[in-house]
Length: 170
Image (cartoon, rainbow, N blue to C red; front, top):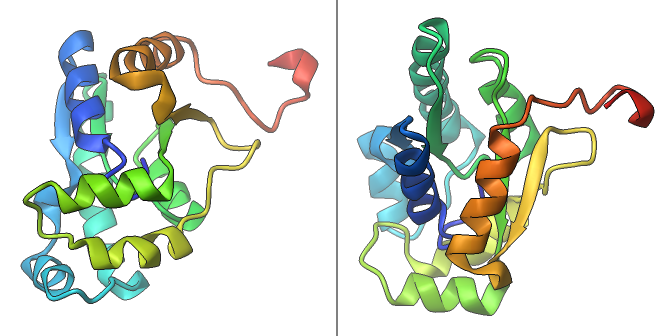
């Protein structure tokens, strides 16, 4: 999870390949109206995002019901979105890719994507970083892709932690 330009697709695709898990690029299930809106430089609102999030929940639920693990690249900017995604089933976890603003802007300017750099500030304004009570791993870009992947693989392959449990029970 993370804002546009944080490396979600790159890291998630590589993670799925390393773990031999199925991969979903969350952008691929955006309704056409969302893509058109973002392409025009208009930020999405909650009403725009709910059908998109529901499509991702459905995709994840299908895999979890079959006992399969998967990786999804999805912004999941707000806690309420992550809470909704968790409804897919037990074991939904988030690796939050944190990248400084200037690097995000540089990346967004250098790629061909429907999300224009002009929407970066609106994404950052919407972002609610995962709290300590969420089962989330914060990964910073200074670690580089390989180190980030190693940390995520180690974390993803450990049993999920009940963040609401007392620290001595985790």
